[in-house]
Each structure stands twice: as structure tokens, then as C-alpha cells.
Length: 452
Ligand code: NAP
Image (cartoon, rainbow, N blue to C red; front, side, top):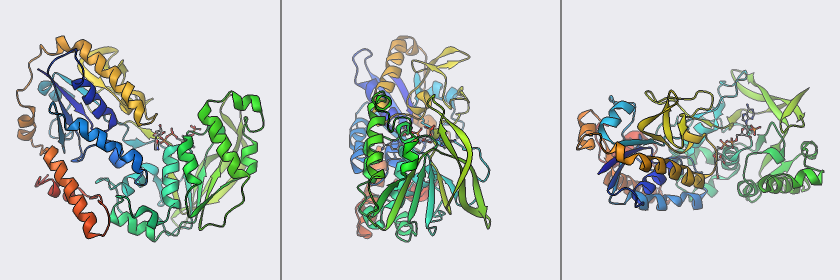
């Protein structure tokens, strides 16, 4: 039997587990999918926005995989805690696949970034997704004007949540406290700002278009911003763009030509503005100073020395995620990833037997959920190529018993199912559908793991 640990139960981890058992090259592979949280599904549960129910329903596919007899979900086990590091994992398993994602936000590195009222979008996402490590209701939703820095899909998500009325979110699993805070939100102007042009923005067209379908928000685009885009009026430059950027440009162009519909909230989609400082007003953020940029002819932009300030008492920085080093594993600081060759972890340039990576910690925080499929497949193929040698190494007979002895309190599949039942019950008491439990003690009590 080949025993494999997959660390992380987000899409890349679950796809890796699936590939490990659904293959015919190596018989009898058993997989433990470990997660720091008592709940599975990673960013599908704690990152995909609550109003994106179709993407959320991917959890059903991931569930089917985790219910396979050859796979065990083991939550509430943190690699890096209770003496459990990469070295110890290799005493318990023949191979370990790290699928730990990219847990931190990238920094802007400009003055005022840490002023009260300025948050990473990842903190805001964690809050409305009921992540048990999320800070409480500390977002300045009494502000009338908010700035979202960045024009990727996370920026679109947080701008959309700010621009939706609470009634639109009530049917989702958004936690009750976040729903209450959003119901009282005074935010009316949401400025989503890119440092480059609309044809260079990172959002995908489906997500962008959705902003134009919100019942209580207008999307406004300044024709002057659009006119700066190298592909705006140059048909050959537009034709040379990847299809997604061409479609994005068309959508934005349509909005620029459309007058305001006079809805309650407004999303101002701005471009060619590079943030240079967050401005302080009475000890909190009061606005953002941007430098106007123009295309540099090489896909980037250069500053013009002209500045614009946008008033905002809430700033969400949505400029990408970043991988976090796991003690005991090599880490490439520059890219925020673990160095690897076809998924094999490299220590000083040499493949380390039994150690693998997949997902964002392998390739960086890019791509959609489906991108994790080929990524996990490549890693698992490498592992299966190495399997004969890996299986020779003796490992613990019962890794779960060892974890318990060393102080971990694992939440297994029945514990997770009990959390689901508790969330459904919570929803019923609130007159809503299933509502997420937002705190550790609530989750562990529901899973019947005491003192965890
Ligand atoms: P992203 O796609 O990399 O977008 C980051 C944005 O931040 C870009 O507009 C980037 O501009 C900007 N930026 C970076 N550094 C900046 C700086 N110093 N100053 C100003 N702007 C800066 O990252 P993301 O939005 O966090 O998304 C991460 C991944 O998750 C993506 O692959 C995304 O598609 C995926 N995701 C998908 C969905 C969905 O499918 N619905 C939802 C959420 C996330 P430049 O382009 O100029 O660098």
C-alpha cells in the first residue's frame, strides 16, 4: 500500500487525491487529505463569493471525491503545529503533496497602506465567507465612498458584494453578522481602479459583465480613461489581443457609452491610475492619491506626474495573493512559491524524494478553479513515476493515531457532516437557508471535537 498525505483540501488538493486513486499504474494508493480547518474545500468554501452559487456548487463534485473509500478527510490538523512538519510527515506517509495555496495578500508598499479603514481584499473576503480566522465586523461600511485597488476577479468580487443590497445576499450562506453589517452599509460609490488599461485588466468577461446586471448599481466608465487604451480605437491592436481582453474591452466600451440609470449605488470603473499613497484624515484613511499613467508601448504604463485623489473611508486592496513559506519546506521568496520540477519539490535544486506540490503554492496565484486539474495531474504523474522507490520506505502503521498522540484533534468526515447539519439548523432558526458558522469554537463544537 502506498500512503500519501495531501496537505490542503481546496480544489488542487482534492483533484490530486482524485488522480491518486483513479489511476491504474499503482495499485492500492490510500490518501489522507489533511486540512488546518475543520471544513474541507479551501477557497471554494472560503473564497468563492456567496452569490456565485454555481461555482460554489463545485463543492458537490469535491465531496464525491472525498467520500471515496480510499480517501480520508482529516481536518483541524495544522502542518507546522504540534511538532508536525515536513520531516515528521515523511515518517507517517510515503509521499506528501503540498496543496496549501497562497494564503496572504500582496502588499502595495505605499504610504498609508496600514491606516485604519484600509484592508486587504482577502480580509474582506474571509469576513463575508465566515472564515474562522477572519477579524470581526471591522469594515468601515458607514463610509459613502470606497476604493477597490486592482482590476482582477477578486476586485470584481468585493466591488460586487459592496454594491449589492443585503436582500440580494440573504438567500446565500453569508454569515449572519456580515449580512447585518452589509444591510446597514452606507457605501454608495465604489471606485474600482486599475493601474493599466481595460484591455490589460485581469478580470474575466463573465465576472465583469455580471457587474452590469446588479439590480441596484450602475457601472460608470470615464471615456477619457478608455481613450488612453492602446487597443481602444486601433482595430489591428484590438484584433491582436487575446479573446478575453477583446471581450472585456467591448463590455467596458458599452458602459462608457451608457448614461447612468440613477440606481442607488454606483461602481466607477477607472483605469490608468496608479496608487501612490493612502491619505490620512483624522487617524483613518480618507482617500487615495493616484498618479495618472499612460501606456509605455510595451504593455506597461509610465507615470505622467499628474495626480488625482479619490475620497474613500474604506479601501480594499485587491492586488493579488501571495504564498506563505511553510517551515521546513524550501520557498522561492520572489515568486511566493515552492521550487519544483513537474511538481517534485526541489531542495537545493535536487528533487526531494516523497515531496510534491500542486496548485497555487506550485504555480502562483493565477488561473481559475479548473486550472488546478492539469496542474494536479502533472504532479501526481511525477509521484506515480516515483512510487516504486517511495513504497520501500517504512512509515507509521496508523498515522491518525500518531497525530492524536502528538496533540492534534482531527475532525474526520462525520465531524464535517455534523458541521453541515449544524449550519443547516442555524439557517432554519434564522429563517434562511444554510448559514455558515463563523468561529472556531462553533465549528469544533458542531464537529464534537472538544478543547480543540
Ligand atoms: P490578479 O488576477 O492577479 O489581479 C491583480 C490586480 O491587481 C491586477 O489588476 C493588477 O494589475 C493589480 N495590481 C497588482 N499590483 C498592483 C500595484 N502595486 N498597484 C496597483 N495595482 C496592482 O489577482 P486576484 O484578483 O487576486 O485573483 C487571483 C486569481 O484568482 C486569479 O487567477 C483570478 O482569476 C482568480 N479568481 C477567480 C474568480 C472567479 O473565477 N470568479 C474569483 C476570484 C479570483 P496589473 O495587471 O497591472 O499587475
